[in-house]
Structures are given as C-alpha cells and as structure tokens.
Amino acid sequence: MPVAVHEERRIMDIRKYNEDAWDKKVIEESPWTLPVNQEQVAKAKKGQWSVILTPVKPVPDSWFPGFPDLTGCKILGLASGGGQQGPILAAAGATVTVFDNSPAQLAQDQLVADRDNLQITTVTGDMADLSCFDDASFDLIFHPVSNCFIEDPEPVWKEAFRVLKPGGSLLSGFMNPDYYVFDYQKIENEGLLEVRHPLPYSDLDHLTKSELSAQFKNGDPLEFSHTMDTLIGGQLAAGFQLTGFYEDRFDSELGDKVSEFMPVCFATRACKPV
Image (cartoon, rainbow, N blue to C red):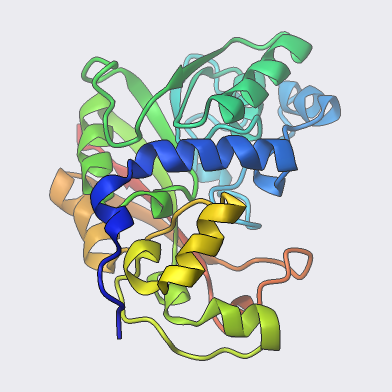
C-alpha cells in the first residue's frame, strides 16, 4: 500500500528538482546525456540516419515527412535535450528547436551545433508550458521518453496540439505504466521481480521516507507513472488521431530485468487533423 504523503510533496518544486537532477546526470555522463559524434552527423547529412523515441528501436522512417530529407520541416524537440536527436534531425535538413527543462542537457545540443555547423535553437522551459511558441508553429514534435518526470502529461498533449500545424505529427515515447509496479530495491539487490506498488506510481507517494531521502541524496530524478487513459486517451482528448504505435525494451547493455519479460516502453505517432 502507498505510504503517507511525504512533506516533500507539499513544499518542493518538482520541476526545479528534476532540472537540477538532469544537470547532474550530464556531469555523470548518463547514456541519455551523451551527444552524437561527428560521424553520425556526417552520415545524417548524407541521408543515412535514424533516431529513437524509446531505448533501442529506431523510429519508423515513414513517421517523418519526406524521409530522409527533412528540408523545410520545422521540428520541436520536446523535452529532448542531450545532443542526441535534435542534431541528427537538423543534419537531415530540418529547422530544429530543442526545448528542455535542463540547461546542461541543452548545452549538449549547442555543443554539437557549434562543432558541426548545425542550426539548432535551444529553449529552456517546462514541457507542459509552451506559451513561448505561437499556435501552429511546427510541422512535427519529437518527444522521447520524458513525461515520466512530470506528474501530469495531459497539458503536454494539449500544448503540443496547439503549437502543431494542421496535418502535423506528434511522435512520443513513454514508459509502460506496468513498469512501475515492481520493487526496484528487490531487483537491484536480489534480482527479483516482486510486485509492490499500486498504479499510477509516484516516487513521492510510494517510496518510504528513507528511500526517498536516499534518492534526494543521490540527486536522481523523480519519476511518475501514468495510466493509458492519460497517455493515449489524453492524446485523443486533445484532438489527435493515433496513426502509429510500437513497443520497445531495454537491451542487455542497459541491464533491465523487466525487459526480459515485457515491453518497458511504447511509442506513438499522433496527427493533428487538417
């Protein structure tokens, strides 16, 4: 059963905490903060490229308009800092804006842009608030797994719908909600998959006080699971039409026990009607 609501929930700024946590991940060289290399950018300029919304599986080529040449396509990389997807899309010809909560993650995109002479605009902000962008500003939004770091993704879908042009697409990755049902202390310490948490899950509500204190001490981001009603139903409620879907798992290099038994991530392609 969930533990009592911690005092931290009432007093902390979750967005600011996760901003700092991801800045720290850049210093620690987390795999999700390491920018692409010059060879990958050079290949993308020649039309040889792929990007991921989820841990391993490449996004289908058909999800991009005019693949592999994205010239003329205005793309918003939503909560996608880290110098991984934005530079590849820019090298493929797109006009790219990367929007992220972490200044250090955005600095990775700027690093690649400066190194490889790419045109990338970086903007710091909350993925649920795109008020700095006008209506119908983008042809495509690229939103890799990141909404697990906010409590409510439904404003993300509404804002994405607003800033997309009619006929535009939202490509999103998200965690399988069932991923969070397990006790990760048991997985890490004993290699056991033991059901512990009711869903939807929240680090702030379901970890014990000592576990949460350890998380704060380590500076690890706070995570939240969401229902499929919120993840897919929320996109439909915002006005999108779902046109693509796939599942993914972590590979053996990333060492995730749950992936041995079920998909841990999903990706969707949702279109704004013309």
